[in-house]
Length: 221
Image (cartoon, rainbow, N blue to C red):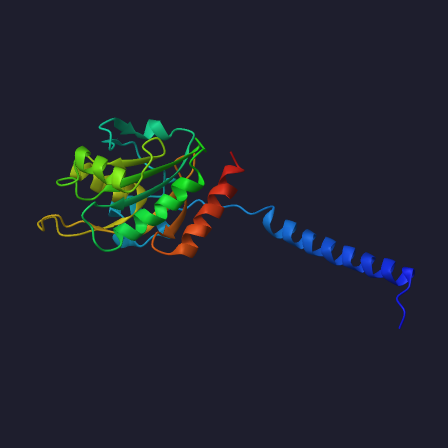
């Protein structure tokens, strides 16, 4: 069978139509994509103070003030106009924390030159995680202090922001010493202090999803 010029033209035209249809489908599906704004009702009640869970107010991360790994006061105002990822950890954790730190480092490197994207990691063990300890931990894990802030401070304030702000720490018996039970969650927060996504910080595919969602969120700024 001989292939003639009209047959080639027809074949190329069919390919053009197929590619065009596929492109239109992709654009239609993803061009209007929006990340949800998460409220307290989207989380496990065990992670939230009852007064917050039963509230019908629009949820936003409350004001806070802590110290970072360089001993500088770090507040919510330092995140004005920023998109950021928050999590909870402690430096002596031998379980999920090293995996979370390694995965958060990938996010740091992905956005290392982007001043809009920040990372904040709160210790759940401030009795041990002093500024000096956090500073050493930052050096050990190649944490860029301009991009990624390790926060310590008053234990009650940390507990409150975890349960009233980020919904990332389970309620435990206050009589038990060092009884913080933190999740493996990475929490994505937009420039309006609203939670836009929650990701398992130990899973590579969740980190990829988080990075994609950050890029989507940036387009709305």
